[in-house]
Length: 402
Ligand code: NDP
Image (cartoon, rainbow, N blue to C red; front, side, top):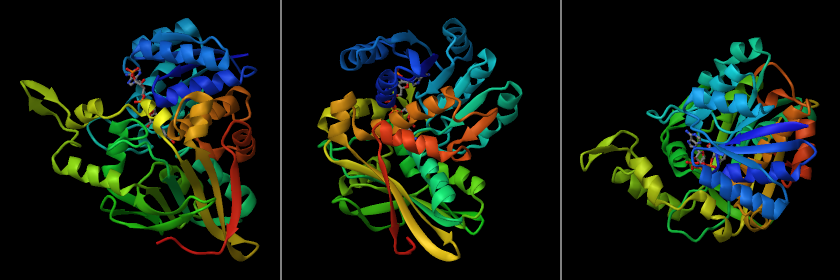
């Protein structure tokens, strides 16, 4: 018997609500809260129609700690699932501490005025969560999230030591729009335009955004796509928790069309995150841009094709160098049929539900602030197969990605 409070009613929040509703024996009561309660109500209606379950809704401004604490004290959930935006991570962690509730999120904290994300802010909550005997699970989406669990699985079952890690995220789908992002446009564009960092021989190496790319052949008919090296948050926790890793890189596919539009938007200043005066009012160009771009949650019925996200781990097994690829392929159309969402929101929302399930069933339990790879990967991997994100392991010839 557990009650979960989901905060954030966007593309990902909708999937979390649907997937929790499907697992009735664990999530006996579900409340969905967001800044705009009408969005929660629309999701609740759809969950009732598609999953046959009633979920309750509430309005909350998660930037306001006192307001969130009041909601937590009224609802008394066992767990808060934060699928609002990274800006809300710290206020929501503060609210959970004050109300004595466990916490889970899918993306690490970013300050609004700097396009920079790192775990330091959230890891700084370690003692407060431990002293309060509470648990915070960070980054329970796909990447970060499943990619961390795949790495923990490789370290447990496939290799004695991981020496090199490549995380490769392909969206081989198409939504037919001139330009649209698959998750929150502001967060997506901040991430993609940030300088690239990868880990090499005990240090971070910084390079210009999108300056390193190469071809990569994806499995199961997806075929050849260009992958671009960029910084991604799970690199930081993975090299900390697996100190044998000498080199760690994150790669993502982008279409020529996406990159062309992004370049123009950057060149004309539309991706700026500093305020500019417009008609006597201060606006942030990137936030204005978000307001005119398609809402990611509207892309569900339009998106065709597949995603393929996985890790390539290279290292030593019984004294021999080996390479393994662990990946999931997810169909945009199948996600839409199941929960009315495209695969990017689905591949984030399902692991958020599974992370919550791990915590509520005490399969993953601890006091303090944790990253996904710190727990036993096996029950999570089993749950991925049960809840719509099946994975495969393939042994490959050893070949570095440069
Ligand atoms: P959306 O923009 O679609 O949804 C965000 C939701 O959060 C909206 O409903 C929004 O408000 C709500 N929200 C924003 N600010 C507040 C606030 N102050 N108080 C309450 N609610 C608020 O984003 P997505 O669903 O695409 O993404 C959600 C999260 O998932 C993001 O943090 C993103 O970074 C993360 N993510 C993680 C991935 C992973 O693999 N780990 C991949 C993709 C996304 P309103 O109700 O007004 O609309």
